[in-house]
Length: 254
Image (cartoon, rainbow, N blue to C red; front, side, top):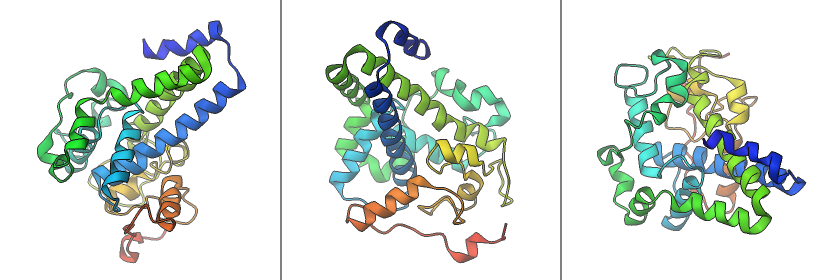
C-alpha cells in the first residue's frame, strides 16, 4: 500500500518545492542510514559524542527502516553469516527475498540485543529503537504543515520509497551484479550503480573484505559520498577517529 501512495500526486499535484523536498529528504536520510545505522552503529568505524549519536539515530528512524539497534544487530548477523544458512537476507534465497521479502515476512521484527550490547547500554537509543515510529510521524507531519498534501505525498512518501529500495539494493544487486576484486567467503560485489544511488554502499565487495574502515570506496575513483561527508564532519569536530583502509588491505591492485 505504501508504494501506491505517491500515485495520489495525480490528485494533489506536484510542485517544484515538493521535488526539492524529495531530493533533500532522500539524501539526508540516506546519509543517516549509511553513515549512521551502517558505518557507525553496525561497524563503529568512527566516534561520536552522545549528543550527535542520538541525533544520528533519530535521523535514521525517519527513514522508516526500523530502529538503530534493530538495524545494526541484523546487519552484524549478516556479516557473521554472510550468504550461509543463517543469513536472513541472502540472495541465494532469491532476489526478491534478499531485496525486501525478508522484511515483509514479519519473521524478523525482534531486536537481538546480545549483538548490539555496546549501544544497547544507552537508554535513549533503546527508547528510539522501541518507539521507532516517532521520527517518521514527526517528519511526515512536518512535511504536511510545511507544504500540504503534495509535500507529504511526493516529498515524504516518495523519498521514503526511493530510499528504501536504494538501501535494499545493497542486499540484493550488490550480491549479484558487479566485480569481485577480493575473494571473500560470500557473494558480495562492487557495483557502481548501487554506489551511486546509495551513497557509496555499492562498493560491497570492498566492504566485506574489510568491514572496519569508514571508507568503502578503496580507490580514488570509487565514489563514496558517505565517506566524503564524514571527512567534512571530522573537520568541524563532530566526527572523530575515522578508521582508515590499511595499505595491506587495498591489494590486489585493480
